[in-house]
Length: 369
Image 1 (tube, rainbow, N blue to C red):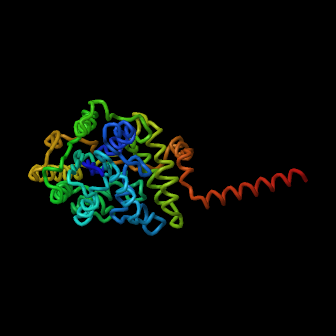
Image 2 (tube, rainbow, N blue to C red):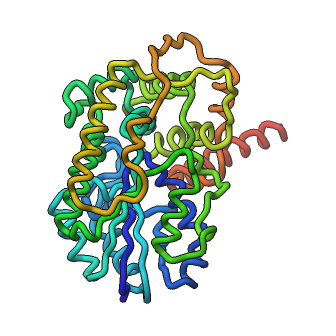
Image 3 (spheres, rainbow, N blue to C red):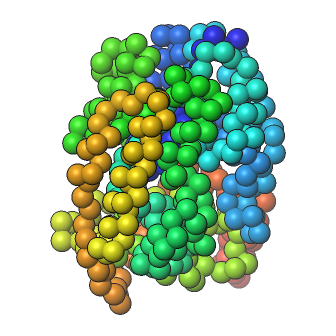
C-alpha cells in the first residue's frame, strides 16, 4: 500500500507534456528511489482520470470512447501496490468538480497526499489552448473563438471546458478545501528558465538535481504556424460527418498534425498566430485578478507569480490565408508511423487485407491468362 501520494494535477498548457515525458522516461530509476509511476497506456494518466470523471474520450455522438469505471479501478490497483510513494500526473485532474475530488480522495485512501499544480500566465495559455481545441475538431477562427471565451469570462459557447480548466484560483480553492491548503502547491513556470520545473520536481522527490530532465522524444507539441492552423481548420470543416472520432484521432490528431508538430521545424519566415490587442487587454486583466486571488488562498507558491504581469505574446490581426503551400500539404499527406497503424481496429485491418488479397489474386489470374 502506498504510504504517500504526489499528485501533479495541471494546469493544461503549462509544460505538462514535457514533465510527464520525463516521469515516464525515468520510471525504472524512480522505482529504485521508492517512487512508483504507473504505466496505463501512455506517458500520463489521462484515460484513468477520464474514467474517474465519467468523461467520453473524443466525440460523444461520433464514436468517442465511453468512459466506464474500469480504467480508474485498474489504475487504483496499481497505485495501491506501490510500496513507498506513488506519483499521479494528469492535467485533466484540474477539471474535477467537488464531488469528483471527494471521490478521488476517498478512493486513493492515503493520508499523506500532496497536490502540485504548474501554471504560466493566462495570456500565454490562450493561443496554445486554441490550437489544442483545433486538434479535437473545432472549426472557428481565432478571433471568433477569442470572443467566445473573453466576451463573458467564465463562459464559452464553443469550448466550455476552457474555463473549467482555467479559472485557476477556483480550481486551486477546490483542491485546498478537500486536501487542506497546506497540502496544495503551485509552481509558477519560468519560461526564461526551462529547467526550473524539473528542478522543482526533483526537490519534491528529494532526487539529485539532474534526475528528472527534458527528454528529446517525439512529444514536442510545438505551436502551429498560421498556415498549419488554417490547414487544420480546413480539414475540420471538410471532415465527413459519417467519419468517427477514431478516424479523426488516428489520421488527423495523432497522424498528420502530430507529425507536423513533432517532426517538421518551421522556418523563421513562417507566419505565426497573432492575438488582437483587445483580447490581450482582457487576458492581462483576468491574469492579474487570478494572481491576486491565488495569493489569498494561503497555498504554497513556488516561483514568482508577480512576473506574470510581464508576459508578452505576438500582438496583431491575422491575415487571411487563401492558399496553403504545396510543401506543407505534402508533409501532412505523408505523415504516418507504425504507432498510428497499431491503433486501427482489427476489423478494419482484416477488411483491408482481404481486399488487397482479392486484388492481388485477380491480378495473378489475369496475368496467367
